[in-house]
Image (cartoon, rainbow, N blue to C red; front, side):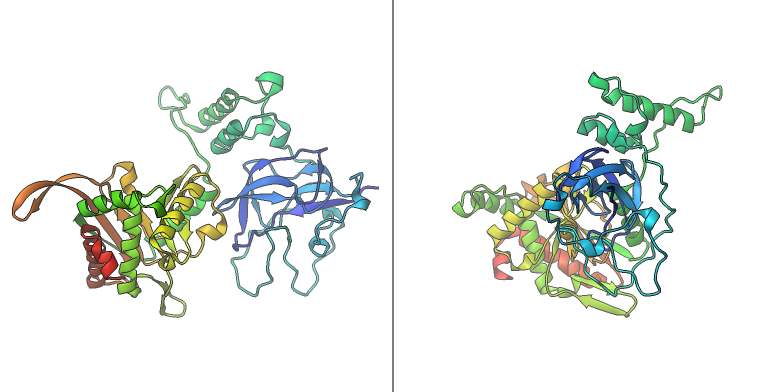
Length: 439
């Protein structure tokens, strides 16, 4: 007897309304078990692996790799009666939220419907919070979707196809065993580009332009930056700082046993200096509540660190960074950086930041005018440390210096406060003893 269940894309707990299908780990005909990873999705904040809520056999994949799917839309159909040991297993306790087949669904009842999805690690709490209305979703076709999971392709090829907006399901592979190769994907992408670009000579397409789909993290980042830039009136101030003493202190810290195995960089002292400045000027660590017409001052610091990950710019944050010791802060910075660059930052890692540092110096850049992370009041850019001519006691000398840039929301922070914060951070980096004296 067949008993089909359709697994709907869940809200992974961050109030998101859509996600992209990154990679299927199963294909029609595969046997799956409860909590077996079946798909990777990319939300606006992170790549998340979703487990199966049931035992059974995959009958259909209802969404292609690279497709954007709204929360609540079925993405896979599983025959739960097809599992040979289904009667002997006890699936995860989620029957109350399991979805019946689309053909058997009944009209919605007048009372408020329950939210879908109780998965291990992705449970959704009932909430009365008002959220943005989801887009109207067309009914899922009964015909099986063409799935990229049918195509044989290595993970780098799948990633390339996703980046270029090419569906693997429609390609004929030329590699071993009929597998799809990079050349196959690039050829398909080139054909699409040529068709979409108007020729500049003799009316023929030349393929000199490329169209990259804006999805997932890039889509979220673009929307967040536009919202921030055109909502908060930005002001940016700059300060050149002699950090010779900080660099010397850094070398001494690296030799201490408490920092064994920890990669200690100048960012550690910049972070500690900013945390000390926040303690001296709490208003810099706040947010603007336009609805309530209030400024919300945060008496805790979730320190965001901008990370250039493979998927794009992300800003994970260290929770309660102000409560950490210097060795604890060093370990947290290293763990955050490694997790972010590996693409393993979770939605929780990316949520709740209160103030941010962007280390543009690692790219060989002196300074910039950083845009605020939405909901924050300030962001500090730390430029490269380099040998610089400097006047010391009336004499010209070569010192190690950098440029600090502080952008802030001028609705909350005036020039005097912004200047005081930037001056304090600079003073502590010029003489690290001040970090001890002011904390």
